[in-house]
Amino acid sequence: MDSDRIKGKWKQIKGRIKEEWGDLRDDDLDEAEGHRDYLVGKVQERYGIGKDEARKQVEEFERKL
Image (tube, rainbow, N blue to C red; front, side, top):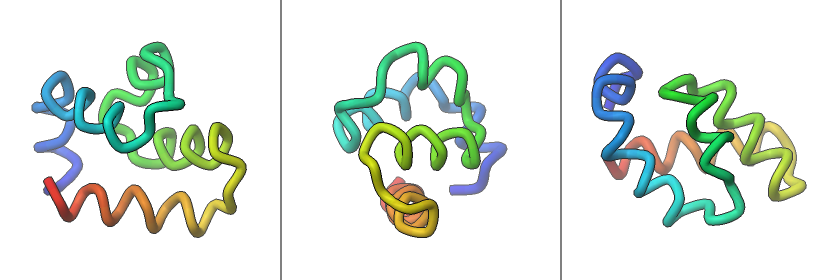
């Protein structure tokens, strides 16, 4: 799903993101609101993983949408 469609369906996608990465807070997701790089950074920060791994996880998540 492309970033414009993700932004348009953000409220629905937010729930699925919380299922995937339960350590992300609502304020993290409100701030991310469809911005992939911000989401990658928060996944990296909350889970203590490298940027490449966080980006890979977010890209895999997007493919499942």
